[in-house]
Length: 436
Image (cartoon, rainbow, N blue to C red; front, side, top):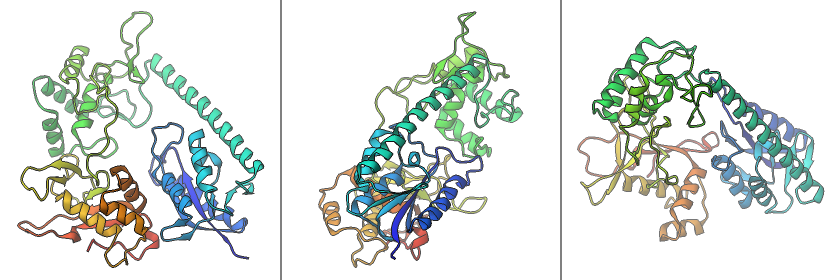
């Protein structure tokens, strides 16, 4: 009897405190056992770690890739797909829209199966559809109840003047009450300098030069510094869901139980230094925010490129590289750069070179690349018939990310070997080769 080739999908809403992806690994392990018990074999895995499925603005790239492969009936390197296995339905969908998308993809070809802990489910029958609908209703009800409980819990903590839960805020010790002697002084000086006219970028560079790291280990960026300075907690005020909590007895802002870094007047003054339309993010309720909708990426490889420059402590920088206009070259009207402060600041590459290399990786001239994309897709990409968003979705389905190696000073020719792809299925490919 031939085993049915299926895809294993795993998702967690939050990773463990150690960020070791243990939850999704365990789900895949259970999926392997379930598939084997039901006469199936897992040929491809899809993982959305620390990604929720309740809100409509949460992206799940691996879920989208799974649906695309189901519609195609084939995983790029794993062969045909005839079903999906998951530890529970709510790992796949928690919203009606996602349920509809999943069922449409799963039943887009004949003979498909859904493998659950309770056995094989026929998605084409009324009974199989009703089972999916019942699990969806349960997931929606549970999600609403859990969200309400969490909101009430946070509101109650705020009314009691208790600090936020989660990772400790920069400037305070682990108890979230006592000031950190070094970090608190940095925040106090940053607020005073900003009120005096210093730029946020300058403050971020100063922190980076001092070797300052965030509470999660990140390098200081202008956005992070702005969030720290404009947070109401620096002056003792308590906020919840972006709004200052008001004391019902006094009518003024609710004051928390932790030690403060600056006076309320200084906090209001630093918030006032940010004008409407600022590029920086703000958490302080008095800080102006952009009211327009979210802006998408301007450049094709935004979010995919990571700096491969060497850092002092050894290893690669690994920071995301952003796009930036360039007036120096008509051949390269924009570049991707590693921004100092957030990264090492030592790596930059022509945007045109990168996009040419990406096209060569997706559609190699000899047709012998690691992936096999349809010829119709190549023609649409190269003829200009494919829009920007579709190109990015294809890239997201193929690349985990792309490492950019530093260039050689004085080199006048394009060096495609600087563009090193890290494929989604690195464990199933011989190895990632540089673009040719």
